[in-house]
Amino acid sequence: MQIVDKILHLPSEPLQSLALYTQQSKEHFCVFDIETTGLSPKVSSLYLIGALWYDGKQGQFCSRQWFADDYISEADILQAFGQFLESYTFLIHYNGSGFDIPYIEKKCGELDIDSPFHKIQSLDIYREIRRFKSLFPAPDLKLPTVERLTGFMRKDVLSGRDCIDIYSQFMQKKYFRDEGMELEKQKLLLHNLEDLIGTLYSALLLNYKSAQTLQQSGTNMQVREQNDHLCISIPSPCHFPFPLAWEPDPYAVRWEEEEISIQIPLYQGTLCHFFKNYKEYYYLPAEDTAIHKSVGAYVEKEFRQPAKASNCYTKKEGTFLPVPAGLDPEDNQPLLFRTSYREKQNYVVWDDKARQDEALLRGILCALLENPG
Image 1: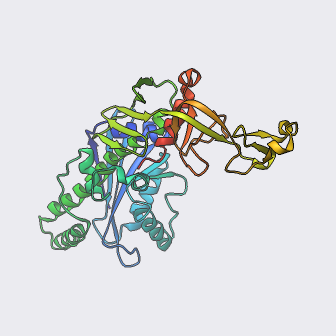
Image 2: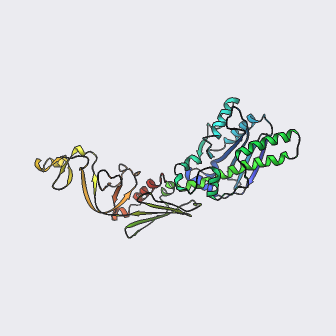
């Protein structure tokens, strides 16, 4: 087994994205990636594990690669990697839940070695961004595609299948003491290292799932009314690598540089607030409203009737703000209104009280952006 350590000069923005998304400090993360000679751990070998982390004391990024320069180093690599991980809280990877982690766990089982993942939390960036993949202007979420989105340009041009052939060539050249073996090894190390760096860069896409940003009450929110729309802008502590626009009816959201802007149409007219427990209400046809039975008992029987779910409402005229489905009306929020019983879109009254209620606006925005795309 060979161990290759490097100091890397990388931008801090992806690390800040991870820190914001997980609410962890920068020193708690370890990015990892593996290289194998096949997909099945039963009939293939693990020949390389790479790790990337930020050294807070030195103020620099570092990498370490455990490389099998023979066919008998799997156990040594796994044990060394397991000991290394004991210093970290979060393991960062790109689709490692689908391949890297189960591969290593099966290898550990075969070799009677403790899994290195029992005491560390895991964040699969691929699985996180897959939930809002429709936002991104890309045909897929393969790591090379995501790298290009975030601005990282590779020097390595090899595929995983290419690396299997090159590792075989490396072992043959080593056996015959061919000087070309060093070049083959460097190709493999570069491919793995750039997978690590690409995984780190992919964390920038987590910035578009921005509820964490909006929940920070100290963040300065700018609100203005423009014609029949409400325009909200809020700075982000993280940088957006490319501008994005998303228009979930009836909203318009835009991420650009270090700001999120949202445009919300205001509704003018009369809406209904529907009471949940309609069996506890009477409907008054003449007034077209529902009242609680404790009060309705005093209304003559010919002017009242048992309320149904569709007419158990009270009406209000004014200006209203549409709110996303994620806003929970049971959570000390203002009354919700709708145009009709079957309508799914909810509204809240937009008045002077609402204009001063920053918590309400943050709640609306967090609910909207909790699952973008």
